Amino acid sequence: MKMEKKRWLILTASCLINLCIGSLYAWSVFAVPMAEYFNSANGTSLTAADLAAVFTLANSVGPVTLISGGFINDRLGPKWVVFAGGIVFGAGMLLSGIAQGLPLLFIGYGLGCGLGMGLVYGCTISNSVKFFPDKRGLIGGIATASYGISSVLIPPVANALIESRGVQAAFRILGIAFIVIICGSAFVIEKCPQGYVPQGYVPKTPAADAAGADQTVDKDWKQMLRTPVFYVMILMLTCGAVFGLMTISQVSPIAQNMIGMSVSAATAAVSVLALFNAAGRVLAGFISDVIGRINTLAIMLVLGMAGLLLLCMSGEGDVVKFYIGISVAGLCFGSFMGVFPGFTADEFGAKNSSVNYGIMFIGFAAAGYIGPTIMSSIYNKTSSYIPAFGFAIGLAGAGLVLSFVYRKLSAGKTPG
Image 1 (cartoon, rainbow, N blue to C red):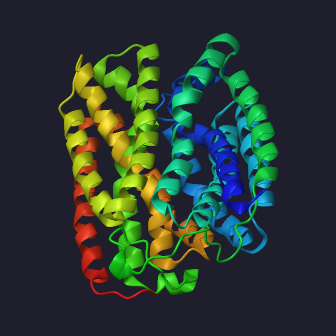
Image 2 (cartoon, rainbow, N blue to C red):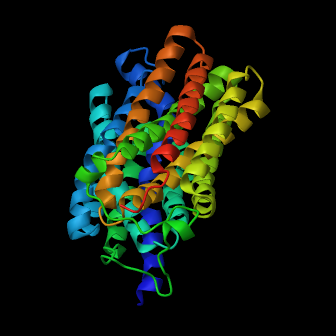
């Protein structure tokens, strides 16, 4: 099979794999029934907010294996890294399915799923982007969208399993399914040949390419860390990811406690947020190939602040306002996830992008800690989510300022 056709098959397998590990985003569907299960079994009085630390841990440890797996991927290829990640991720789900208290849930979901996700995600995303130097933004968007769309597909399935078999059985069934799908699909994944260029594609020069997909000199992680623009980019990623992860981790409880929705309606809200999250990845990736990465990110930060302001103004029964707010927040958060793989490859080169993007992903991990922690802490103290949304608006504004700092640092820059 010619590489021009094979790369699309590899992308398809990568998207199927990301669909499985993206179930990490469906945590809010598991949080309430898991808290109820622990309370019934142990006589505790846990809430979904108390369990938010599990989701925080899963997001925080991802960069550990994303970076280490990136080193292996850049040298040996992604197949066995993805295979190992599938085993670790599925095992984490299985352990969650036998947990009788928080310690094993932290080990299973927090560490197992988080570390497994890091192994898989870095390989599938960076390898896909390497195969498509002609469409970095779009392919980065599609590959990350398959991760985000999982929260549209998994919550109804998980909810049905929870209602019919119980929350622990739901974890076990999904864990087995994910091991089979991820490990099987890993054998379709191949390493992108070094210096691969699609037939008929001519890399553009900075002067000819308004989107920023220039012919950049490859930098390794040490060289990347010596560039001031890296720190601007990673801080901008953190600012842009906080409001998304803050909302994703608690959207079901927010819908129930702030808007007064039923459990089933709140589950639907999880899927709506995930749908716009996935759509934002593809749309922004495509747009960034046309108008530039930094222009796209700046626009999304402004829209994100507007969406968060709508959530601040929402109250009991404000269903329409709430849905618009979470839709815009999901769209803008997804945009950051879709644009940054290509943005990182543009800035520091594709050769070492697995490791470089893994290090850049630390900004996402920081947001994974800051967002849910701030949300649960503020709600526990004030019984209101609004101050947390106000905090996120401030961070999005800081991200917008950083976009101008990036422009200043990049002004007149030559490749490399």
